[in-house]
Amino acid sequence: MRGKTTVGPSPLKVLGKVAIASIAVTTLVLVCVVFVGFLAVPWLLSHAGTIIAGTAALLACYCGIAVLGAAVWGRPRVEIGPDGFTDRGILGHRSRLWGDIEGNFVDVTGRWQSVVAYHLTDAFKASAWVRPITSPAGNDEAILICGELAIGSR
Image (tube, rainbow, N blue to C red; front, side):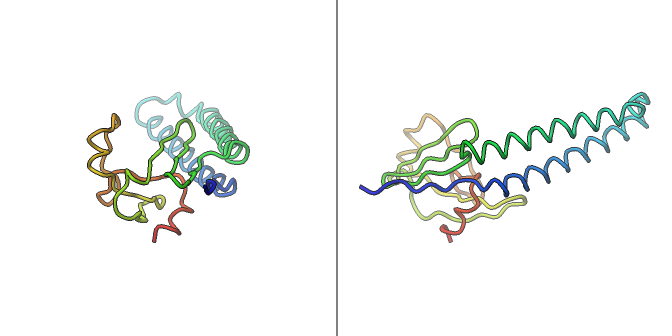
């Protein structure tokens, strides 16, 4: 019996993605504070610095936790074994047996990231208590967290 292969996160990639998202969110909050401050609530402008500093501090803590999660806990990750795979996210996990999947895995590139998508068998969809929703490119489900898997799906 072969062991499992684990495809885990790169802490530097996690840091880069979360840092870019944090800068974008902070900029969005700044624009909203200024816009709403000029139009409706002038006191927001006098407290804009505090609001932006608080938002930036909160998102910096989120960055630290995300990198810590990637480095220490190894999440998010995908464990691939002889019987199937387990997609372990930040808080939960989803396991699929190879017999529950039909067809090939496909690499679907979206706006923000690449995902690995796949079709489930009709028998599994009929018996599953979790109903799959349509994911990218008409597939039933997708693994969103490990772009490194896209290399093997092509």
